[in-house]
Image (cartoon, rainbow, N blue to C red):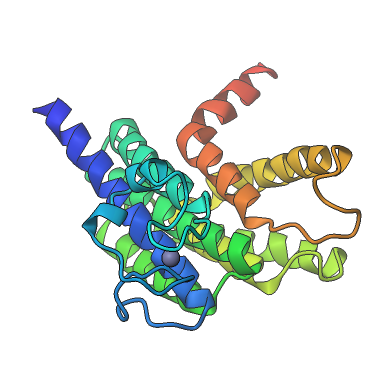
Length: 251
Ligand SMILES: [Zn+2]
């Protein structure tokens, strides 16, 4: 049965990933996430079930609309596949229901804001507010850590990014600052610090490489949320282990 559970959860993740694409794209475009039904943004043709199978439709159609041939962003199947894998990984990695749900909340938030940041370089307030409320409700129902840990995590996330926003003189947006507050609420004080460390590490490393190979121009702004996503996922899944390994260097 456990094998079937894994398949159901991966499918749930794939389908939600597809929904997160829609949410991200439509929120930045100022559209409703419910109506109209999914359609090609180029020719307007309404998509049928054949076009909407996560990952496989994109691969089968070779990333183009069936009718007009317009290119479909590779971000769609990437977000779908990532959500499917991360939902499954959260489930396999967790030791309690609370931890599974914490992982799923974290992955959901990160996937949506990755889409909005790559598409439009924004982290929408609507999304932040929605997950802020959801995270508080989650923490009340599942008080796995003392309440002050969530509060301290949120405060730390906010303050760190706020400081960087000031120091970087606009290089870091207000959306990133608010996002980190919600992330702190979800993962607590220790993991938000580790997540911050890895986000800046990945940003410096991958951003530096992209510049080196001329993929981004010198003053061109780069979306930071994908690095936040990588950093927070590293912290959430491997943070405790990495922290212990780090401490053992000194003992
Ligand atoms: Zn089309």
